[in-house]
Image 1 (cartoon, rainbow over the protein chains, first blue to last red):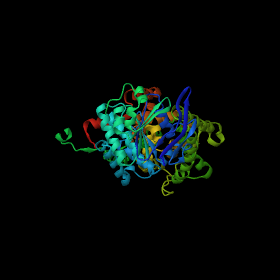
Image 2: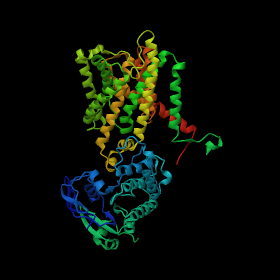
Image 3: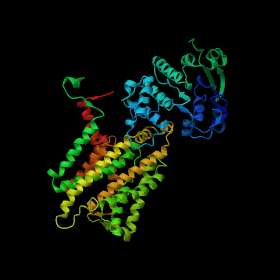
Image 4: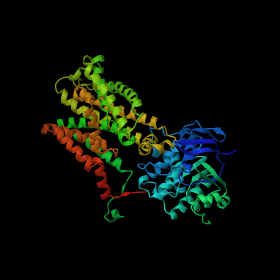
Length: 251
Length: 336
């Protein structure tokens, strides 16, 4: 049984076929990369799966349950979380509170109004654990808006991870940071995700990163899948190589 | 590290609000001992406005919604007191509060339900329009509301009728007693609002303020949170109106009119909407500034306008915002 399956998923924006009958499967436990040039439909696909957009037609099945009609919050409850390409944080809240709020939301505690958030020991402990896993423990009292870009990218992933998803979509977790930081971010993210047994789908442009960390790579082109396979097979795929500018360097 | 060198005590970031609050309360309790009756009365007005502005700031500062119609809830609280007196002969302050709060809460819930379907300018215009509906009603149904003359509100009894202010000297006794009464309600309201904004619910409101999309992707039902914030906000501003009517002795449509909504916005900006204590300082400061401006010049509106322009251009974080910046520079706070 696949964790996630889309059936003939379609989405058009005017003349642009952003998602052209995509049948996408994600297996439990894998670290999957979604690649392709700009406008290939990667983010649209993630938006359709996470209910940020509604498909024109087709189905999304999560653990073989049809979730096409479910709202954002219902899909999160089902176990699908995501981060964003452009960092999406609560800049006026502390780093700690950004993660704590995700845990409160997951536990259905956000309606609690008569108790101080800081007094919830369970949430506090778990928040500290998550921040430590992402290497942000020393920054927990800073406002999220005060973090450096690389730390902001990590916090963005940490907030999504704290929702306790079974399936986590990461939309370009390393965009906008230096190459040195990229490796550091991906090391952290992949180790947390793998040790937490979370299935991850990562949209990524940097092919070095993609080949190094992925179990499987799916290449999109003009709203459809061009290639799908383990890193070695993708590296050998000529269609893929012709689309990427120049052949990928050996990892 | 510099702080250690000059032997200043380290000031912990989490502790200062409590220290500030304790000092503030101590000062407020002693005010009638050294200030005159008139100053005490002004401060009573100031504390009432502080409650109203704190309530208002639940929406502006913590939820990111700018209401231009909070006169509705303040005015409704005031008129409810007048009606309770006129129709039912109720004179107990506690009954005014107990019966007035559900009225303002229900109307806040109804108006809020409509307004939170939109954000930004559309939200602001809706709140303004709805408040002016109440204003027109108060103006046109003069046989009920007294029209522009308003309704008289007699001095109430306090603490379930235990304290009455009939007879000679009643007025000055009332002013001092009422100051402490309002101070009590003010402290209680401030404590409740403090807990609200530091609860998981309050954090969710701030998250929605900062980033609505991400808040949705935490699974938060954004509109419901905004509605709840609106209800709470209107109710606290309504409580201020309930407390205001007996002190003013008269309630007129002015407190329902949109310029009064503007004053509530002004107070909050003056004190600083990004700091919890900002609206308190703003409410008190505005009351004194306006009173002295009105007393000293017939161009008082020009004076207030100038203050507002200076505020927006030079001190966007308000009085408290500036104080915090200065304090941060002088006493480095411990972090992490």
